Length: 287
Image (cartoon, rainbow, N blue to C red):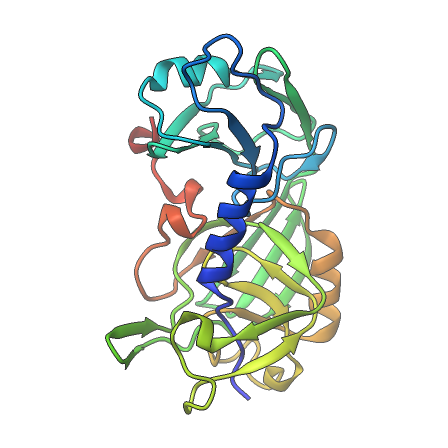
């Protein structure tokens, strides 16, 4: 069977909305400017940032405000980010409710990041985990601290598009710099959630093991024994990166939110910011 690729964009939107609506503001205070709507801090997955947690070198801070922000300067002062050792960085406003913060390059391991002034939230950057998925070789090269620690054959997006109703669905693994958002073992992948009926010739609904999510529209690195024959040789999936059992289990245990996955030499449109492509935005366009 062809790989399941895209989980529900709808579920991701709901999760983000629930985070914004239900989470108490984390690590910040708006007492210094009561005119600002209260913010909450999350990662790009929508999960609240955890004080004292350890994240990967590509971790992006997301501030969700409960209402539209008229004075972005005041909001950025309230959400001041400091690091030890010092790192340059900037907020990028996605819309009038949401801003993302990152430095121009990946963090150095061990960097301590503090967000907010009156009730700051602090987390630490862990080991440098950078994976390079190269469609020219059909291999994922995993680096830990700059040292190659594992090479994993993969089968990526088969390419092309399909018209379903008024939607055109793409089956490429888009090139760009992704980060690990979260992981599940297992996760149910259902093609109908993004417009591809289960009973269509490319449809699916199945439980997938060792799934590490790297995009908001449901691209994962995950186990799929059914495509071991293709891994390292040809692309068969709807967009995910298929791995064999041993590699998928290892990568699942290795990965933490904020780890970097660089996808190269694939077709399709470049990864967009809304898809978890913060690091694909050039720095001169970010600031």
